[in-house]
Length: 456
Image (cartoon, rainbow, N blue to C red; front, top):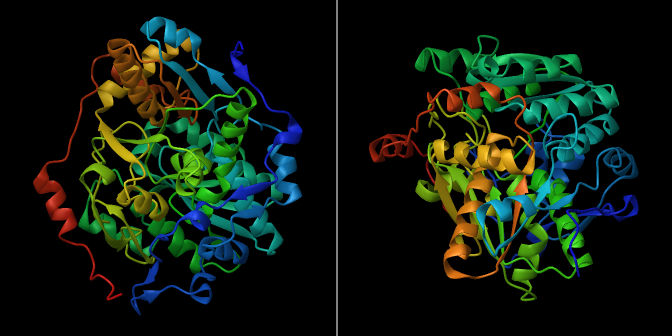
């Protein structure tokens, strides 16, 4: 059977329920912990921070499928189902016998997969009668997506944007403002935690951990607001499962069984969403796949981090989560061009990695941009730097197939487009881009500040 360039599902094939991979995990992800009591956080403790329905989703380890409300499905119809693309041109350019597919999530104004969860979180905030939400954003995709979602439901949106990205990506910032969001560079002098971080790290370019602290403080000190997050959390990976569910449905339509599934990994939203139904099959013993998480060498949570309880934010006002972490005080180098700059990793993905159900690789950003440019020139899409981490390893694996003669089927997540990342592309084109890899001493200092571990 000839496989088309783009495999499209019909509108009726948009998933009607999100898939919760925790339901099939025999060993569940470790619970988030209240740092005051050092006991698992309760729903009542989380409600001042998150919307009520999202608290339920965050703590639900047992319900395999959670129905997607019709208003969210109606919104999805504007840009979903997204295409699964056979990368024929890339295969030809590489001269590889491998078959390469990518799930393209950049076909919406936000330019990334982040809209899948943003619209869900905005919907639940509206249903609860809230006035608005606060959030952080790193590279800017999440802030853009959330500003679109809140505008759709008539909610206020306050975004704290990592300062280095705020300065490098003014056009991403202006898209958020066009959709009605206020955007503040983080760390800022508008919050107590921001002022404290600036005092300790003057001149810092910021981190997602900093921005999270500021957004949470703003939410809990402002009536009618809640905090929403674009990655890491269980609820976010749940919403992003639409990516994997659609991918699997498209592959099944043509009887395609992937050998390996590759995704970029920062906090875990894209990777977790892409792999969830495939991991479910692995957990149930129905099929097997090689699953590869790709992270930046400058922020290597999986490959060089420690599996331990850590604060989810730099200001230490959020709960503790057991995750692969570099330490909540870890500050990525300002020369790191893309997102994927969170100090830790999703508790779900951390547990899967610890159980050996997936592997991880770290790659330097110059090699990432080598792959991005190679992909753009033959496939016609300028990829986001984040997505290009997955492209790098997909190309590496395809090159191995060329050497061995194996015809493996590779699927990777193309999380979004890079048209707002042209400062980074300019540095690459001008040969000004450099690689920064933290030293063992850098990581040792950061990991030395891990909090006391729970007794259970």
